[in-house]
Image 1: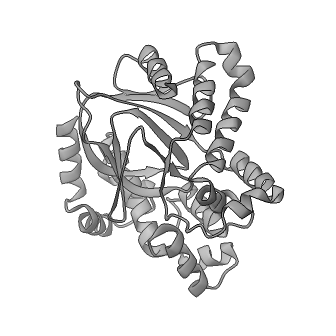
Image 2 (image 1 turned 30 degrees about the horizontal axis):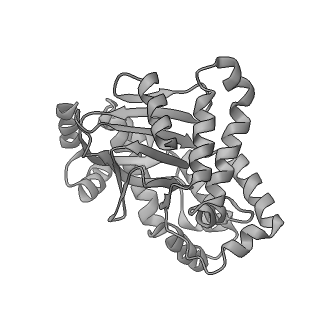
Image 3 (image 1 turned 135 degrees about the horizontal axis):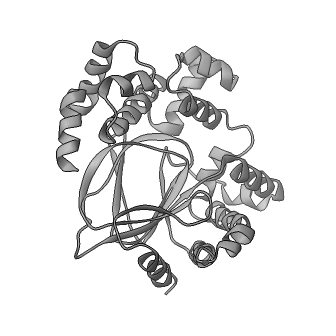
Length: 294
């Protein structure tokens, strides 16, 4: 019933495909009525909740399909391929995108850990890597509905939006993805901080030694912990982040040379070689393919 109410709110507020603001910072509604194959993208820290249809993400070869039975939690920036291949006029996709504010999530995770109960609930939990699918529970459903119900009123959104969003964050941290998210946002998670720094500085030179130093670890320890958290080596992750960001910019209309420079490549030939190695096409061919699909 709660999901039906959420779907009704989305369908009432938007009458075309795309991603739309709600009036609460970091919360967006979306609809898709055409299938879109999975394409390179960078998921920022977020939760995506689907109430009708399904969405897909591929991370380092692992495919995640989520719908109204599971929401997607991605607590750290991740290079993925994402799409809505099953969406159609007959079976439209409706969903909500929730950006995860690292400061608020960290604050809540710390309070929960200090309370003790959160730590005990995580005992024996094997953390996911990069992305976690979590079952919708009533606490999450109710918190999301309460948040969306205030978005029609500008004053309500301005006054209550932050507290309702905080309630939703708490529901996420209490839910099935909670132990996974708390590892990313809890005190002392140097890997998450290293990824956040990288995500904000894709256009600047970066070395694994520098990332390890920022995390306060030796190169060997950093490499092991990084791969456990993301499934990728640090070098593979850096390349995937840069190329995924560049591919998304090219698809949006940026020139190949601008996209390459925007993610730190000074050599067009190196960019072209690494792009083809991952995506099987030259950047120019990729641009032509994406524009033909538009």
